[in-house]
Length: 332
Image (cartoon, rainbow, N blue to C red; front, side):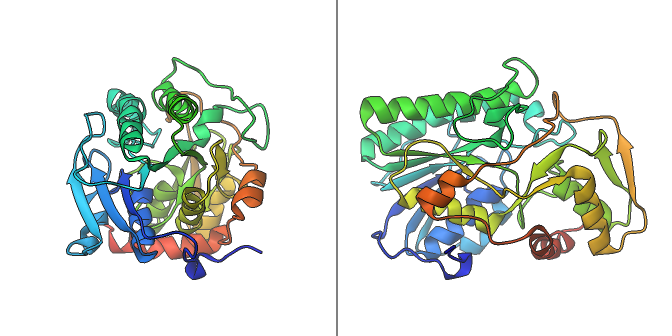
């Protein structure tokens, strides 16, 4: 039986002090909220290179939340003992048209995945803390295996435009497992698939925010390529619950966290246009994402179901309806 997000609370874990890097980001800020509500103290860390202070303003004055302005690529000094670390600091958008896309932040992206992982693992070792790395479905590159299991090694271009993100995350996974095997650190790895919801940057450049903004303006939805490429979109509340269940577990090997319901980008555009009754339709443009856009992306979540007793419960249309008010409230 799948536990619904709104009903889930920790029943077997003591109150922890948890460091979350990338705390002002889309997913990181939702993790702060969930874990505070679940009875823990959270230390958020961010340098705002892609995260937004607005995502944390509601936590100002909360005695269970502390914020440290810091770049994880630099040595990390936490003034108190922590019980767990969630390393979520990194640019994540592949869109070169966005100032927050990793094609425009290549060195910072590799530092967050390389030096940031090294530094946060050092904190975990010093505190004997549980450590969870935010990895990505980009580990699999343009996959020839479908859907993607954690045992699949991937099909990744090591020097292409996307490599700054892909290889940073692959290195981060290898480093995390090295610390687990050599230093006996209690580590976990979440391979996160496409996620959407409130607090995404409106100018993020990825499909969901692009389509929502264009539909709100009654503009044609722009599809790069033929739109037949597929993705699997997970609503952020579902994803956060999967991450938390991984945190509370003792699993060390990578686990896919995402929604296995696959949809083409073209059908996603049609779905969003229908929600807005947007008469402008769609237009097809040449591909503008960095490198080759993977043709298919779908997680095999058997391990998450079996080991974490987790699977998503929020369907795409319901999740989009939950996301739209946030975008409406922040329209320029």
